[in-house]
Image (cartoon, rainbow, N blue to C red; front, top):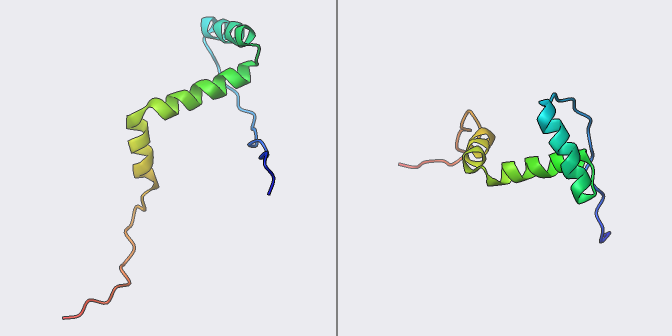
Length: 76
């Protein structure tokens, strides 16, 4: 088993940003010596991690919408 794991797959997405946000994104990436892609990924991970309402909602979405019938046999 390798000690260093393979990085997650990346996908290309297209977004529109307000101009001041786009400029700030580029400046922040330059400030930390990274790329805008890395800044966006890190910022989104942070938001998803911190938003407790989103976590609860996401957990609810994972629950089956139709309860599966119980396989237990009830005896009288």
